[in-house]
Length: 138
Image 1 (cartoon, helix red, strand yellow):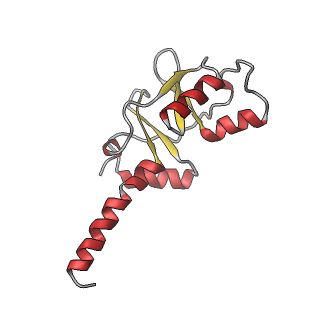
Image 2 (tube, helix red, strand yellow):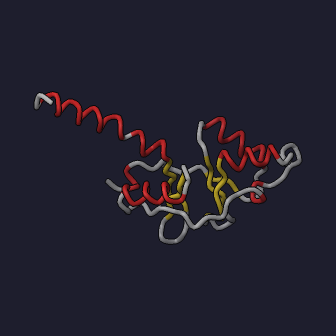
C-alpha cells in the first residue's frame, strides 16, 4: 500500500499571512488536526498543528491578528505519495508527529496523512484476520 492510497486529498492549505484564529477556525470546521502553510508559489513553508494552536493560546497570541507563520513548524518531515505506507508511518512514529504533509517532487503539497488515517485501516484488517482465524478454528 502506498501513502497516496490513504492521504487526504486535497490537503488543506493556508497562506503565510492567515491569522492564528483563521487557521484554528478552519481546523475546527473541517475536523482536522493540521494545515499546510504555503508561500505565494504554492510550495510548502511549514505546517500548523493542534499543538501549535494550543501554544499560541498559552502565549496569548490569539486575538491579535498574529500571522500563522509565526507559530508554524518548519519541518523536513514529509512524505512522498508513492512511498510505501509502512515507511511513512515509521517516519511519523520516529519523528513523534501525528500529521505528515505529502509533497510532490517540486515541493508542492498534494495530500496530508495522519495517524488517524493509518489507524483507520487497522480495523478492517483486524476484522479480516479474526474472520480468517475463526474459519481455521483458532
